[in-house]
Amino acid sequence: MSKLFPYLNKKLIEAGCDEAGRGCLSGPVVAAAVILPKDFNHEFLNDSKQLSEKKRQFLRPIIEKHALSFAVAMIHEDEIDEINILNASIKAMQKAVSQLKLKPEFLLIDGNRFKQYEDIPHECIIKGDGKFLNIAAASILAKTYRDDYMEKIHLEFPQYDWKKNKGYPTLAHRKAIKETGACIYHRKSFTLLAPEQLSLFD
Image (cartoon, rainbow, N blue to C red; front, top):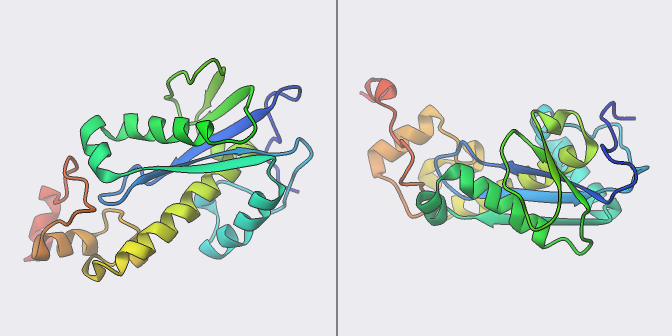
């Protein structure tokens, strides 16, 4: 059995929300919203960052099968550049909530920032993906769906090695940007080449 809390509000239909890809240089920010049965548990369920890729992929169909409702939403790089990554992350979570087939009565949000969505009350939980099962489930869906997307666009631009780094600012990723330039999937509002790393490419 997981040591995470199953819910915050036992009597309400509660959805956990989380996002993935906020710190990446390329690709979308992806959010998920998940409503789990109150009695759902699984020994492996935890913050996606604490799990191996194999365990995340193992848990994804289990979450999707048992969830009362789940949804995944993306905000792409052009909109991220337009409204900034914080607003894009919040918008992605709101979009995921809007796609749930079962309307939640309460939202548990990973992190410390959110904007009121319709008339649904919410609470922000710092490091909530390591505290509540529904947020952990959302973190796993957001992460695996985003990874799948990055592996798909890797085929278009293999020089950035997104299959491996998933768009995060690794030294190899930034070196490829310096050598070949940015592409359509890069977030132009981000610092794609960090000054302190440029000397490492010489």
